[in-house]
Length: 256
Image (cartoon, rainbow, N blue to C red; front, top):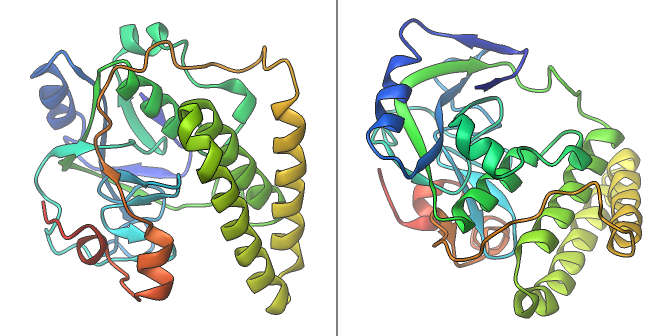
């Protein structure tokens, strides 16, 4: 189990997850419901009720889309398949973890658990959400908000999608990602958030340098036969910023 230092667990939080994972040998990883430590009625940013991914590689969650965290009203209380389990509180079967060669150490922090879940799905395993188990997450306790955090988020996300997208998707999706990242950087530049802009540009440079590196430090998917679950085939950026849809249910049109 992976557990962040800024997490408070609840009583009997382990048993429901273990029972769910033992019910199917294809379940490789699982996360509890993550609620905010300082406001326990709200879902927490780092994974909420389970992680999803959109077609351009932007992660979001059942209960959290970008900076909007929903109130927990029981709307995601059914165990279900997801794209990724949050590393803030993530159960993973040890044999599968070692089969996948574990987390990609090159990432250092941020999105390494999403990359691992992606590789496990490509190998034919499932990732699950178990809302009957609840933990409270402070958020930002491991690495505070700033240029370094922005850099790691953007760099690691670009490396992750490059590693796991097939070539045909990379050709058109990577230019689209750079364009959207540029829009995000310009928006923050206009608001005076220089640290965000520096983090994004440093991430681009690091990603381009990484493309031409030997990549010996990285862990890549061994198989690509699995069906990806928890994948939204549209753009969460379009839905959130253009169509003003702020919740998971509005965007995916799906309740649990």
